[in-house]
Image 1 (spheres, rainbow, N blue to C red):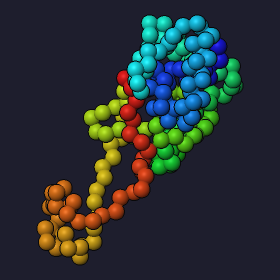
Image 2 (image 1 turned 90 degrees about the vertical axis):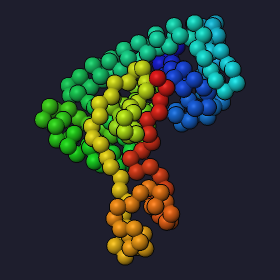
Image 3 (image 1 turned 30 degrees about the vertical axis):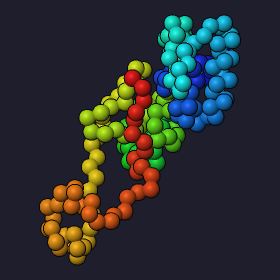
Image 4 (image 1 turned 60 degrees about the vertical axis):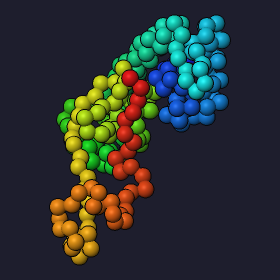
Length: 205
């Protein structure tokens, strides 16, 4: 059984559905479906109970899920230990903004430990869950964190967003600087067309 197929199976199990998993994996739903059928054919077991768009693991699926996690972890360990034995290598994913902000200081620390660094752009945990990177930089709402059984997280920093306006704007002239959200929403304003710091982490627990 190919490790790549098992990684796809694990993502479908975590997403509890085919389409969500396909979106996370950046694959066509039909391709993901063929992989699941191939795995079920290989083991001669039904791994999911399909109820509409919701996919729930069967008892055989639960067993394979835990074993697949172990196998993928072992595969990562072998790659780290034998793939680049002379100089440790760290793979980091994140949005363009997060990588630009955190990577320079990280590179300084790693260079002192003789580690090399590789960055990949991704706005969520997809590359991490597919074992394509060792560390993922993501954002989450205050008080929340990535909900994933196989992911350990560490809060690095809190980011506050502010509304900026000219001192001659009618909003400030009428209300002053102490505005409520409702008062701000009475006026048109510009927001980024895409998330500045990447997607919020919302993976299955």
